[in-house]
Structures are given as structure tokens and as C-alpha cells.
Image (cartoon, rainbow over all chains, first blue to last red):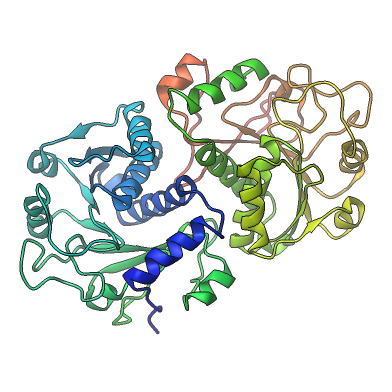
Length: 236
Length: 236
């Protein structure tokens, strides 16, 4: 049976609850989210298959998760490169960026060139708060992600997909189907249209809050912060 | 060859550097430190050997690491119990406590009773900033840790040990030798006197800052946030 999903509105409410009554700081949650993402990359792309990971980061929390993931990937032995064209002035993101710079992780503005020398891609451009139009400079990036043969792991949502209604019927994301998706905390309704490997991350959700939001807490293995779960079609 | 060690003074300076120019927040560092501790417990005490983990937390950062570790242990399937008699009013610790309360993790004031029903103990009472005397209510707790047959994992230092000079020659900690020690970021000079299994945690130290402080970055395996390292005698 498929895991229950969380609408964009409920996902925002849950995040807000975790950070208010739940007493988590955004630093904590983003660290754990990014750690989950890095572990999914490790499972999809063992070091022996190629170490060059291109992490495409958007301007919001999804991008922050990507920045954290990149740092952990560096420590696992990967060679991450960051594409982060719309950098937030927010203190947290600035700090996450500095942490990567101190590790000499390169930032690039040239997505097409970076793509040519990547073994794997993390799409951390847009997350569950995305709606509406894909703004510059991301249309061509999403087209490139759609067209590349390099495997892509999308964080929370394939960027440009509608959170509730799935793949767009027009625009740069039309036909974009990443190889893998990691849903953070809970899958969003768009997973119904997703065909690929599906991971769940965010091993911090307690039974009480899961019940309140009508979510499943999947069975993680050992120390893993990520678990592979069946896609809607149950093909796992 | 033994890993190079970090004096109490240098450890404080490194923490300060990580949180200033290094741009880490204490929330982030404590999350990663506590995660390391939880992984060391998992390696020492597999779930099949007994799930009841008593986490003894002191009033400072060492106690905070213990609180974070306890939360992760809960999510792995353990049943942590917290002894935290001198609770900090600091917002971070209050939040870490609330996160545990939301998981219904019990807090106890009765250390002797809690000890009787524990399968494993985490000593997160004093860390690298400890010096001088063991204050109430901790003398009897440290005596109990010294005398118990239940295995103890000490975080950064066996509590009451002098960070530079090792085991005390008098007082409650005289003769206290935990089964295991996890050094966070780098071993402290006291490891010279430690006989037991020794882990290192803190997989966030970059090559530059490690070099600046004259530290070794050990080879972690896979996704592990913790690595077992030889004790001074090289007995691993």
C-alpha cells in the first residue's frame, strides 16, 4: 500500500508546527533533511560509480537542503559542485554556503558546463512551496535536467512539478521525470505520477505528530536516515 | 600510531572557530555530535542485546549531546531514559528536552532506580570544559557509574577525569574506567590513560581546520558519523 501523502498546505503547517511547539530549529531540521538527501545519493550512486555530484540549488529551503547534502557528500568522499544562481541573503543559507567554501567545494554559474562533467545530479531547486511559474534562470536548467542522461535525484519534488497535480502539461518541466525522488518527512501528492526510485527521509517524525497529520512512519533500517519506499504502482 | 589530541583550551578555541568563521550554529554542531554518539551506542549495544539506554546528562554542552543522542536512539528503536538533574535554562537545551518529551521519552530524578533497569549507559555529564570539583548531585552518580557492571559509553571524557591529566587520584571518579569513550572532533589528552573501546565522532571537520589545529581526520566508513579508532596502546 502506498504511503499517505501530505498536501503542500499541510507540509507547510507541519514544518511550522515542528519549529514552534515541536521546538526544532530550522538549522536542526535542515541538517537532518540534507543528511537524508546525502544518504539517498550514496545509495543511488556508490562512490565507485563516479564521485562528481552536481547539486542544483534553488533560492529557498529546498536549496538549503541541497547545500547541507553537498557538505555531507564531500565528507563521504564525493566531489560536489554547486549551482546556486539565486542566493538567499538569509543568514542560514549564507552560513551553509560558507561551510562549503571552507571545504573548497566549487560554486559555478555555468550549468551546461557543470552538467557535462557530472556523474549524478541533485535537483534541489524547488520544493513543496513551489507553485506557478518557473522564473529565470531556471527554465533552461530544468530543460537540461529533463533532457540529460545523467541520473537525477529530486528533493521533495521534481522541480516545476505541481505539488498536488504532478507533472506540468507545458513549460520547461513538461516530460521531466527524474530517476529518483526523495520525499522529506512525507510524500507529497505528486508522487502519484512519479515513476522511479522513491526514498523517504526525515527520521525525526515522532508517532504523535505523524498521527496528527495522518502520516506513516516507515521502518528505517539500522542507522539509516533514509529508506526506499514503494512508488504508487507498488513496484519496489 | 595514536591520533593527535586536542587540549581543553584548543578544543574550546576550535569550537569557537567553528561557530564564528566556520559559520556553524551550535544547533548544527550539537545535532551532528549527538548523532555520532547515538551511532556509537548502536555499534556497542545492538538492539538485540537490550534496548534500555540510560542517558545521564550534565548541565552543559556534554549534556546537550546526550539529549540529541537520546532522540536519535529513540528513532532507532531504543528505549532511552534521561537523567538530567541540573537543567540549563538555555533555549537550546530546553528545546532538546521538549523534543524528547514529545516522543514520551521519560526523564527521571532517581538515578539508582534507573540504573537497575538499564542495559547500557551514556555518560554525558561532563565534557572537555570540566575542571575542578564534581558538584552535587553528581558525586554519587559518578560513583555508581564507576561501580556498575552495566557498560558505559562516555562522551568526550569519562566524567570527573581531568582533560589533560586523566583519571583523578581521589574523589568519586577514582577508578572510573568506562567500557567505551567517544571523542568528539578529536581525542583529548586524557585518552592516554583510557583502556577500552574508543570511537571518534564529528564528521564535519574539514581538512583546512584539521590542519590548523594539528588534527587527524580519520577514515570513516560509508555513511557512518562515527569511527572506531585504536586506543593509545594500539590494541584495536
